[in-house]
Image (cartoon, rainbow, N blue to C red; front, side, top):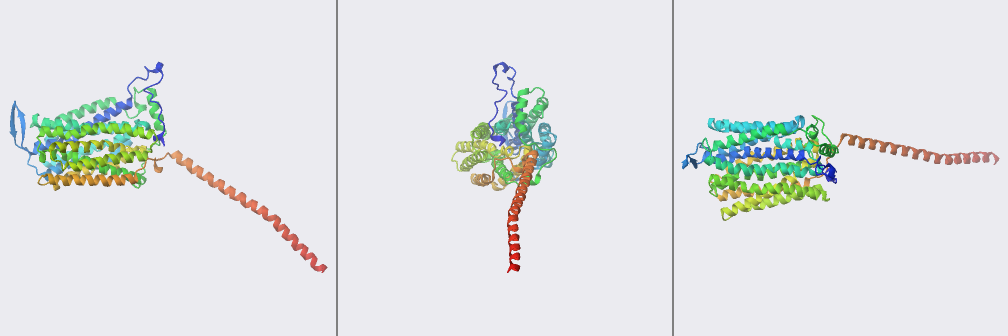
Length: 519
């Protein structure tokens, strides 16, 4: 297994003093990781800002204008059910783009598609206030299109790391990038709350203008700094380029346009990842989209405070995710099997999360509820080290496509969960929210069982080198030929052994024939 081999020393760190100046540049693969991390931060800011801003759009709230605090009437009179539909609209487009996004990343390059899609989504975010003030239909349509744009990002992230991540570093590099999910949430939720209260153009509209502008700034830097592969990078050191490309060369490579769809869709390890993705994202989306509503409706926090408190769980998650990646790489390096490592990490993360999210509904004080949610959501940072990186274990050359397939199921809670929350909590009581938390805990437990049974840490037969398959086929034919020759030789020896017996029998018959006349 390539992923369990002893890693070569990192060429960037170096061992020769005389070459230290030559090898002292910051590793380009970590520049890629940092830029993807920032891109995912922006992506999550564009996804979740509406979750906070909609509180100011649909509820009476206080704002600061010209040094005075005034009560501002809600600009929109949308029902709880309609709000759920608007919040979930993004995920229809997001889900639809998962498989095409993986194919686009494989066909045109993950870095190119990643950057363009995030740039488009940033422009659409800046147009959100105009769409909302035009009509509900316009806002829903815009959010669906924005979901289409951002839906390609995670499949492309896997496609990028299939070119840039040495097997011995894949978990830590991947978990650095997905730490952008909680960090983007940490930054966007409180800032959205503050801008909704103190911003311009009614407060809530400034949320979309500012985050859209940040996304465009990131896009321009990405276009200048990031390249499709180490061989295309103009300033990478030869040592780092050779280290990455030689490590990846040991892994199978996909041929353009060729995807073994039937093998992917019938593979039990792929379905293990699909189940885990759905499970983890059910918990994530239930909390991510609906947590601000819980703080406002049940705990009765104001908008600015809600943004900060809703971000607290993601502060913990931002540290747990990369720490989990380092731990997993260390466990695998120290001879724990890939399968058991992925299974144990996912099980621990989901079990802990289900317990703490469930008891949140029974907390006796708002402070306890916030503490339980912070632990429950924060520990889910381990989950990506369990299931998401597993795609690179079983079929690295098809990672983007498989991530797209799994994220179709993973993204579906994004529009299912808000609808269920809207239906289950019509009166906005603590008892109704307990049902939401119970549903989340049950989904977690089911996911743990299925993933534990089906997960694999081995490269799948349908994802192996073509030349290796040909070599195995050739060896099989050679073995068959040798067996046939051996059987043929055995038959000849048997015939040779039978010949003297036949000669003796004939001689005996002749003697008997000669004796008869003599009698």
